[in-house]
Amino acid sequence: MKIGVLAIQGDFDAHRRRLEELGADVVLVRKPEQLDEIDGLVIPGGESTTILKVLGEQGFEKLKDFVLAKPTFGTCMGCIMLANEVENPAQKGLGAMDITVRRNAYGRQIDSFIAPSSAEPVVEAGAGPLEMVFIRAPKISQLGSGVEVLARQGDDPVLVRQGKTLAATFHPELSDDPRVHQYFLKMVKNGSK
Image (cartoon, rainbow, N blue to C red; front, side):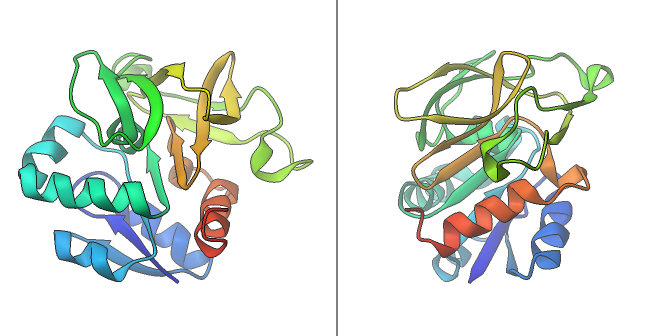
């Protein structure tokens, strides 16, 4: 099982380390053709407008084809990229999840915070709340009917799944808790059933 981490911007190396700790074979994806050699993809945090510029139209379309076909996990900016609608300001998303995401909804960098999830997460029943790191985080403002909420912060959904796609508005790679990455690896292994 090969897991790619989009390595254009953001803390992709923290995702690489976590996935390798969990036994995954990790490929740092910097070129669109590398998507052909992986079974699942993590899109890390970063700046979505910058990623769109770096990818260009051809790279964006290749990435879109991948996320619509294979298991993909987006964190923070990755969550924004996976959405079918993006606000504040509006921009195109990959359309892999039936969600509307509001960029930088919690405020600026100085407003970053760490919090436990509000309810026991579905990622591992009985294991208690997740520690969640929010940095210039987006908020999911609307959920489609096929989107499952796996964790909340207050009333806000912060970890959601739709089919083979997983998205977090926070940074699980910056926590000591490996459960979100373990959950994604199980999705890839199970073929996202």
